[in-house]
Amino acid sequence: MVEQAEPTAHRPSLARASGTMAVATIVSRITGLGAKVLLVGVLGLGMVNDSYTVANTLPTVINELLLGGVLTSVAVPLLVRAQQESHRNGESYAQWLITTGGVLMAGAMLVSVAAAPLLTNLYLGSNSRANTELTTAFAYLLLPAILFYGLSALLSAVLNARHVFGPPAWAPVVNNLVVIATTGVFALLPGTISLDPVRMGQPKLLVLGIGTALGIVAQSLVVAVALRRVGFRFRWRWGWDRNLGEFAALAGWVVLYTGISQTGMIVTTRVSAQGTEGSVATFTYAWLLSQVPYGVLGVSLLTALMPRISRAATEHDSANFVADLSLGTRMSAVLLLPISALMLVAGGSLGVAFFSLGNNGVAAADRLGATIGVCAAGIVPFAITMLQLRAFYAMKDARTPTVINVVMVGVRATLCYLFLATADPRDLVVGVALAMSLSFVVGALLGQVWLRARVGGMRSGRIGVSLLRAVVVTALACGVALAADAVLSGVFAAVGVVAGAWLRLAIDGLLILLISFGGLLLARAPELDPVRAVLRRRFARR
Image (cartoon, rainbow, N blue to C red; front, side, top):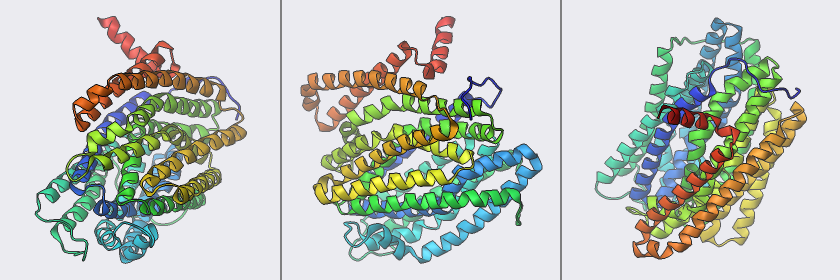
C-alpha cells in the first residue's frame, strides 16, 4: 500500500456512528460504575469480593477464548465482505455464524460448569488469599452465563456489520441495572455469606450469583430484539463454503491469540492473589474502571472505524485504509491522554471518593485509587494497540497480532513475577497494574513498526506531532493541578478525608480537562475539528 491523500469518498459517518455509541456507552459506564461502587460497599475489598470477582471473570474468559476474540476481530470484516457480495450471502453467513457459535457456547457452558473446581484452582493456585470454596460456589452460579455472553456477542457482531451500533451499546446498561438491583436485594437480606464452611444454598450467595447471571441474560435479550427489528430472521444453517473456510483459517490464529491473553490473565490473577486480601478485586476493579474512558471514546471509535477499515482493506483502497488508521491512532491519543493523566494524578482521590463507603475502608479505597492511576497510564497505548490489531485482521493477517501478543504477555508475566519477588505484598497489586500498562506500551510501539513495514507508510510523522502536542498540553495541565493541590492541601485536610477527596477530585478534574482540551483547541489540533465546528456554529447563532 502507498500513502495517499486524505479520502473524500462517501462512507458511513464516523461522527454519527461514534456519537450514538458514545452516548450509550457513557450511560453504560456510569451505571457500571454505580454497580461497582455498590458491590464494593456491600462486599468490601476483601476475601468475599476476591472470590466473587474471580468467579465472575470466568464466563467472560471462556467466552473470549472460544468466541469473543474471533467475533470482534474476524467475524465483522467477513460479514461486511459477505454483505458486499450480496444481501442473501450476508444473511446466510450470519445465520451460520449464530448457529455454529451458539452450539459451541452451549457445549462450553456445560463443560465449564462441570469443571468449575478445576477452573477455580487454575486461576487461584495454591498460595491464594481468596477462598477457593466460595469462588467455586459462585462459579457454579455464574458459568451458565457463558451461553448468553456468546449470544450477545454474536448478535452484536451481525448488527455492527449492518452499521447498527446503538442497541449493542445500550444493552450493557440493562445488565448494569439488573446488577444494581441484585446488589440492593443482597444488602437487604439479613446475615452474611459464610466462609467456613461455604454453604451453596445460602440466600445471599444465591442472590448475588444468580442475579449477576440474569444481567447477562437481559443484555442478550435486548440485542436479540434489536436484530429482529432490523429485519433479520434466524434459521438454523449448517454446511460449509469458501467464506466459512476463510473464517476458520483466520479464527485459528485469533483463538491462539486469545489463549495467550488468558495465560497473561492467569498470571496477573495468581500474582495478585498472593498479595494482601482483596488484591484480586482491587486489580480487577482498577483495570475495569481505568477502561471507562476507553469504553466511552475508544471502543465507540474502534467499532465505527472497523467496517470502514475492513471495506478499505477488501477493496485494496490504500488511501482510506491508511487515513482511517492514522485518524483512529491520533484521536485515541488526543482524546484519551488528558483523561488518563487525570486518573493518574487524582487516582487516590478517586478511590477514596467513590469506594470508601459501606464495608470498605479508606486505606483499601486509597490503594484501589493508586492502582487505578497506574492502570490509567496504559489507556492510550492500549487503545492504539487494539486499533492496530484490528487493522491486521482487516488485512487477513491473524498471525502478526498473535506474535505481538506473545511479546506483550511475555513482558507482562516477567514484570509480574519480578514484582512478586521484590515488592511488599501491600504494593504488589500496584506492581501488577504497572506491568499491565508497560506491556501495552511495548505492544503499541511494536505494532506501529510492523504496520509501517507492511503498509509502507503510516503517517507516523503526523501521529508523532499530534501525540507530542497532546503530551505538552496535558503535562502543563497536570502541573497546574498539582500546584493547586499543594496550595489547597490545608483545605482538603480541614474538611475531612472523604470530603477532601471529592473536593480535590473536582478541582483536579476541572483544571486538567479544561486546560488540556482548551489548550488543544487553541493549538488548533485537527483531531478536535468536529468540536471546534460545533462551538463555532453555536457562537455564530448567538
